[in-house]
Image 1 (tube, rainbow, N blue to C red):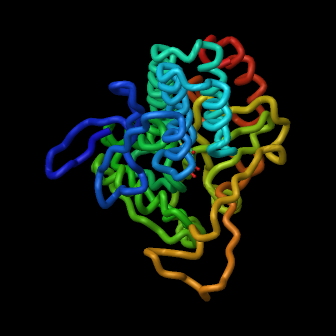
Image 2: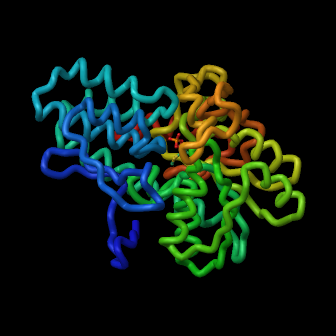
Length: 338
Ligand code: MRU
């Protein structure tokens, strides 16, 4: 991704491996500054995922893959390293997919590099397929951040927008601010800005207003885990946007690589939902929003039932929820992804 650091445009990745360290753009610091976090052992990797130095399902998977290669080189206890890294966040399936991949591939650095490369190339393919769904001048709604920061490069939901923009389609993006951590306002807006794509941040409760006024042509979001029947978990607030899209006859697409599909689950009811610290909701800029002794509930994700999904945009093409059987068979034949 293109990043402007002190007036200089550089191309960097969200996650990479260098000198036996996992390097991450510290996403807690964006958009104020671009800082690099170096993880030197599996404890650092656990902390980086849990504290959301790195976030977004595919990026979490790549970080875990590099983290396990590093732990292996450090001669750490691998059972402990796996246990720790796997317990960092429960919802994104990519984390568990990456851990299994590394187990099966002997925790080699070359395997982690392959994992990162595959995920990156696949997200570009998602972009190419998704671009076909975008018309000139389309206005697109997105939620949370499913951009390059959430993958390694390209993104999932943002990849089609990047490619459509590069093709001169003159798109406009409505960016949900995405409380409580504001991944939309902070990360997605920052990425779109770097790419020169026109956008406006909207308050989380404003999407219905714009949909009703025919201001939104389609919605594209990412996913953290997708069950066999097409129910999917994504950042809290996705569900209500999907319902509103259906009511307003607006196509609602979910962009995700094969690594996010969990075909062991029958439906979204089985997806574990992370509950995060209440202070993420209660405190903004070091100030309490409500009464000092107030409490909050903070589920990080919700599950959108498949009937609200128009189609899934994957590296294998575009699939309606009722076509996921077909996708499952394709994934089973994919030597990297199965
Ligand atoms: O809590 P986060 O920021 O990790 O949640 C991220 C999302 O919900 C993304 O939409 C999802 O991981 C897809 S990222 C390509």
